[in-house]
Every structure is written in C-alpha cells, then in structure tokens.
Length: 335
Image 1 (tube, rainbow, N blue to C red):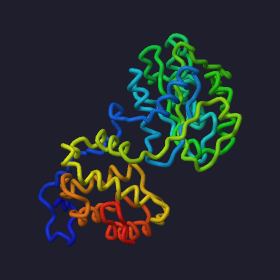
Image 2: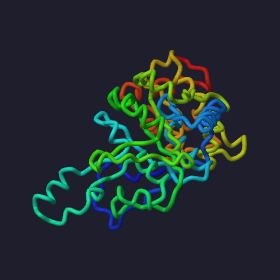
Image 3: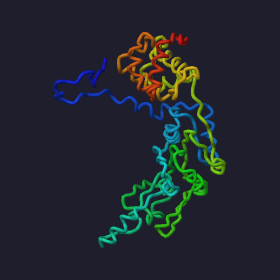
C-alpha cells in the first residue's frame, strides 16, 4: 500500500526526497489513444471538408479538449496552438497582444526602442495565420524571436469559449470565417491566411451558456454524448491498457463502470455526477493504492473509498458516493 504522505507526522525529515510513481495520467492525453464516437468522426470530417470551425460541446471529461490533439495527430500536424479563453478575453486577444506600455517606457527612457513589431506577441489563431505565409511576406510584423519553420497548417484550439463575454464570439465572426486579422499598432496591417494552409479551428463549450446564432451558423456543431456500457470499457482499455489483462482479469474495471453508471443515475442524487475523466482517475488511483484488477470492486472497497477524492469533487457527493458503494451489490443497489 503506497502511503507517501503518512497518517501521522514523521519524527525525522527523510534523508532523500521520496520517489513518486511515474506520471501515468499523461497517457490520458495521448492522441494515438483517443477514441471518437462515430458521430464525432463525421463532425470532424464535415468541418474539414467545408473548412469551417468545429464547436464541440458536452459535459466536462468527455474528451472535448483532447480532440484537438487527436485531429492534429491524425493529420500529421504539429500539436495544437491553444487559446485558453478567460472572462476578460477580447476578440483581439485571439490573434495577438501588443506591449504598448513597454514601447512607451522604452521611448521615455530614450533607450533603443526597436521597431514596433518587437512588441507584439502572437496568440494561437494569430500565430496560425502568420505561419500559413512565407517568412519573407511577414518578416515586417513578427518579432525577432518568432519561430517560423516555413509555411504550414496548424490546428487551433479555442478552449472553453463560454468563459468569454458574449460579444467575443460576435466580434470574431468575419475574421474566423475569412481567416484574417488587422494590427492597428502596425499601421493597420492586414494579415491573411494562405487558403492552401488555412488553420483548422476547434472550439470547446461546456454548454454553460449558448453561443450567438450568427456565430453558430458559421460553424459545424457536435455534442459529445456520455459513453455507456461497452464504449466506456473500450475507453478504459485504450487509456489504461495495463489494467485490462484478459477478460477474466478485468473484473475491477467492469465493476467500476457499472458503479459509475449507477452513481450517475438520477436516483443517486449527486450534485456533480462523475464523468469519464473521473472514472479513469479513480481506477488509476485505486490500482496505485494496491487494488487488483482481477478482483471485484466490493472485495476492495477500502481502496475504492480511499480513492474517492478522484471520483467525487463535491463534499456532499463524496459522502453520498460512500453510501452508494456500501449499498451497492454488483449493479443492484440496496439503498
């Protein structure tokens, strides 16, 4: 049983730092292990054929963000350029940031202020559009440290777009459709993508608020459903293959899936039902604590309960999940 952090304080400081187990959760992000449902496959292909952005919704933990890495992987492209949306995000932020204060300060101190392009930092979509052009055509608008390996297509992920103010989506309608932007600080220079290398744009939305109709008309849309039954088992087998073994050795996984589906039912009464990501973390934690994949969940209830912080993310839910598990019997609840 792995107790790196002890129940009682240690009397002596360890002479050497403790070695923690390998970071296996990184496997959850591997694009070559991503399993898209048939509907999502169709949505991605339609977006690629029509050269339109893809908006993907679904509850947290259904793989919306990792999809961008999967698309880049399957198309032979570099990892995605990511824009993490914030509540303060403005349309311009999607393309670039300009250090106006830095340039002003340099001038005031009468130091070598350099050219205006030295104060620009390109964001995900801005960098992707710049990279569709040859260096000689954009050399006047990129800072000296900008890495330009040559004309290329990029995947751009605009993550959690629902966090931005509602006008954010409306303000980038034309730019997103025509793949261009302007830089007022550089003489209103227009930067336009070479259509032969036009970026592939994916956006995630946790469905916390709807996007404007005009924006959605210019996009392809897909809502990722929560996987059930055998699909969940396929996902676990893909992300945690070391836990599967033979069919007879996967008892813990099948039990954990059945319990997860029970905990997600309306009768369970959880405020935040656990999703796929929580299932993977829970299984991973249980086995690292010492649970055996070939044994049933109820035979290893101690490990399951110790790993509950990975499954239930609200205090009331953790207590309720404990009750549910203790009253659960191979898919039949006694509560």
